[in-house]
Image 1 (tube, rainbow, N blue to C red):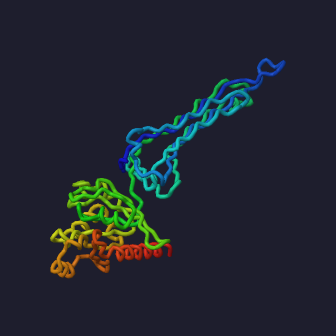
Image 2: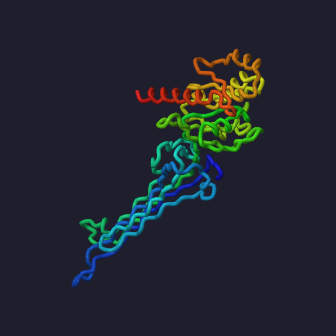
Image 3: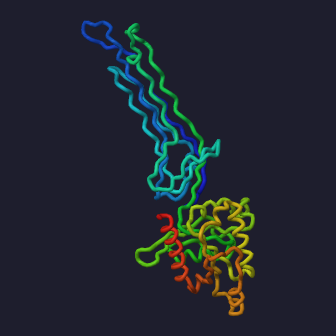
Length: 337
């Protein structure tokens, strides 16, 4: 399935139904009083989050969504039927933005969360509504109000507890395949991962969290270089960042510094998140090189844990899972207090 995380659509609510002009027909009364009914309300366009959906692909094929118009009023003051609402379903995690102004209208983070994008027009009044003491037989009625139109940008941001960030080929896909049930494409060349992968990690029987394997960042990613800004948005919602640094790169400290700079340039709040620093592919490193890695000083690492792991050999993988769970649990507890 193709992963699409942005789309532009147009929505239009229904027009209100026209008011009706009619008069009662009664025996022995050639022209009874006015009894034209009001028109029905036009349908709204409502957007709804659906956790079963994972992509905005459908919106590349259908870009316009129209609610139904209200029906005209009828005899005997009967009100016209209201137009049906149009329900537009999107993945949970979708941000709805006004295309013209750039204003964020709603951030749909919960399953079944709804938001009315445009409201249907009011139905026009029938001639029964215009009766006065000086005009007992009005012959006028109102047209229904027009609906509203809006052009929108949809942006999907993956909902995950943890975001894996690192340079291309740092081993993110291999790691997520080992610690979760996700089956990402894995190969030994840059940009194997072209879409974010989401996995569920279990730590014991009743403890679990979600982790997202974000396509590799490079220097200049915040400006759109490489896969750039296209995927940086997917780590905005995560509670914890796991920096994966390649032990074979020759300079993991510089890798880490560049990754921090790219995240900060995209959104300074990213560096306020808890993090774990991991040096990956330790199965490929000789003992002298391990000794060198033990002495590395990561600037701005603070009290963040630094781990050496290997997804291939399994070195420290269980320790990493427990570490991630502990940091997440602390974050959840601080939020609830």
